[in-house]
Image (cartoon, rainbow, N blue to C red; front, side):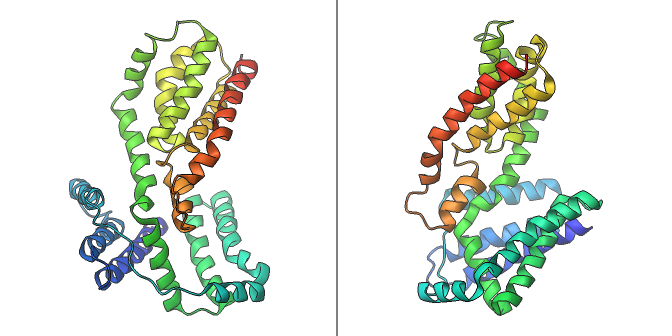
Length: 301
């Protein structure tokens, strides 16, 4: 029930953005942009009672609006840079209180209650919003306008994590792991530990780049490569599994599909080169991938 309330609140935020978009006369694609955010709000608010096929049609419609470039950023009330600097000097480290409250509530509620970490994060976000209003003495209307600005800047990428998580479960249920195992067996010599470990770690990184999430890739690649080519050779499952998962995150550093890590920050910071974060992370990611392969060979066998 608590999680359902948080979904409804998320839907209300999307609905407000949709209304702002419809009312934005300066935005050429205001109907497409507004429709996108209203559809998203419907899936959040009524997703529990709507038929699954109808929700699927709504998601496809959102994809069409995005692919035809009908979802764009509107106009906002901008605060001057001088005002931001002046307020930051007045508030000082108090600005970190709302941010830290999200992590604290997520940890405490996730660890010590039956509600779960996701509900804890949602409650933490509500506390952060209220404490932010108290500390900055901003009005609720300003908070709504800033929420609208932030959501529009992130754009359609905001729903990518949910879609990728669903795609990972779909791939696993469809038996993609078995197809990968069949293909890898034609390239990697059976019984060769070195080639098996390389295929496992590189496979995790590459599939994570496609999926955007190492958790989604882990089940598929472990079933397709890990079990037949690494675990069956005597690898310690705890060590090999942990290293395989973090090897997948080397792929997270290299893909725009990991939107919440690589694309969203670039959008929020208004960077001219949207791939600058990925380009900067690439050398570190490739180095870490090689280290993961070496550690799995040394520690897991």
